[in-house]
Image (cartoon, rainbow, N blue to C red; front, side, top):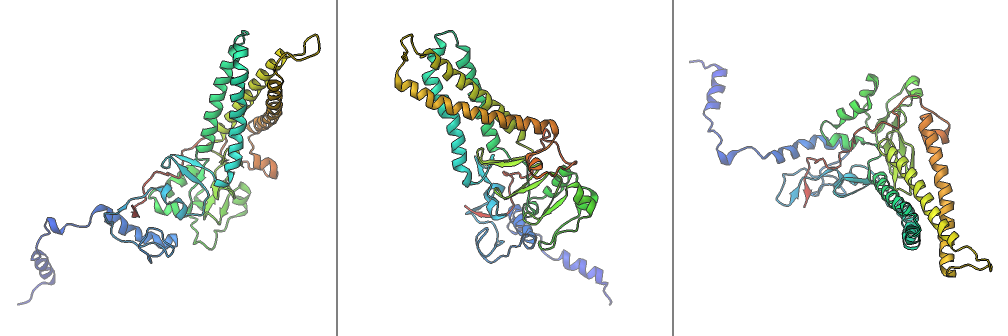
Length: 362
């Protein structure tokens, strides 16, 4: 008797016992870890060690009780040689450690003169009917600190590297939609060695290939050597705020300059009024304590000089806003007609708190 092969397959399948609760498929987390193994060739990693990102690569193993799912900010240094640092569990993005002393200098010139102003001058001004001046100075000091923190701790517009795009599903499409790349550039995927060929037209429009980040840079986007990232509408790297100034924090930086200028002016005026109160008497001698007068001069004069520098920098950036240029374009003499305006502020593309479906030792 001849048996149909299809019927034989059906019988063999029906004869197998059904899976019970103890024979369930692996958990969803284990499946996601296994599925990520297809990405390791793209990332240039191998499975030669038991750790997440070891010296020899990555080992794709089932998630154990001592492992957890990491977030992007936890593996940031492993997926690229960027100097960007994350604070507050990935909620704050700031620059390299080498800028620490510059940033400390900025805080010193903001807090020390302001503190001495309130200690030495506020009471004097208050009792002479000039009480609005200390109140205004306090408000401006608060806004200056807020805008400095926003500038320092905001993603300036980092363009995700190729490795990060491979780790986060949907990120490549989100980047393409945000950048609105032309169709002939959307499919430019590098093999890590040979960059895509750009036409003369695209190069004249400002499109470039970054061999470090392995991404296509849109117009006005530049690679910052200090931070190690490509930044959208890159203006400059400012060590005093410990961050790049780009698409997403330029307005914060501009507001910080304006607030700092107003604060310096208010502090200088307060010291000046205090010194005038100690003007020489008809006998030709100062009426105040010599030590206090020396302190006022030592703080007031540098504050006035600092004010002039801040005003000059503020006027320069007002010029940039009016002309639609960036600091780099002015310094290099190359202006790109296309690209985003500094007034635009797209959402962040790095998703520092997004989970990466790979195990990390707890």
